[in-house]
Length: 116
Length: 268
Image (tube, rainbow over all chains, first blue to last red; front, side, top):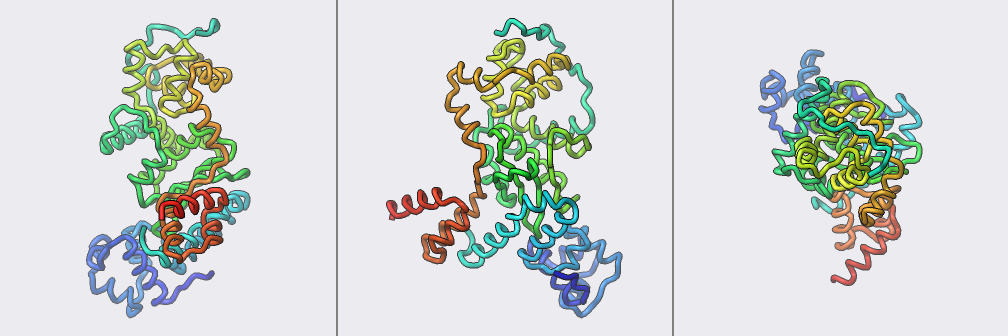
């Protein structure tokens, strides 16, 4: 798993997290102090963003900046979490190793079965 | 009543122990949530069912993790996962851990992507003190303790009275003792005496609270997945999109799988 610093990678990540939170591009723009057209261009990879905009967007989406630079599928994010835990405390990471599998299972069920 | 009980009478009705900021904040937030959810002063008997119903975006998992932390709040993308370690933990302790993680979910989740509570009661950071205070006040509202004490139905010098009250609200005797120190202003010496009641479960058995004691012991080592997850797995199984081996793998419990399969077969 590697950081994806490309415009399209970050744009996709922002779009995914915006949709998870049920926000429109206008709502996200308002929360981050950016115009909707800017959000649209960032998400589609047509426009890059500077550090201040990245901070604003991470705050508006209530995620850490690194979350916007990482792959954005749920399973990938479980891996990100596992990676962070391993860095902090290998013992805890081992005890919580099942979390990866649980998130993957839940994601699979949601896609296969639909909403409960 | 035990002969050695030396709890002082005539406790002040005012707060004898000044509350620290995070402790007061935890209490206020717990009281606010109880009011919002219309819980009144009653015990929350099925805490985990309550969390499933009222906080569908919070996935609460109880799982035995022998070398794991007591609890954790993990954020994976938009999902929040509250983990409660059931290994060697009685139900009251698991309830406290779940309420503690609920506090982190409600008030702190924007602050971190994960929070590991290795040993909850030993942590002294303000955010942890607030979560602990929230947990006990959410499980056992101060008004209930005060009313019970003032009406004379809670005798602080009587082990049976204390144990009965703790089990009614599903809290440990240690949590209750801490709570009473803050709510009623009992002395630290009295708190310690209450917290060290020998064999609270023996006292509970003497009181005839057999079912409650069984629940406490039965909770040790359990695995409980979020209702939403189990519902999805069963829905998939019923529709044929999840096979029996897959169901067993998803639930990690052969006996539960067999029971559910039998139940589904008999109701079809």
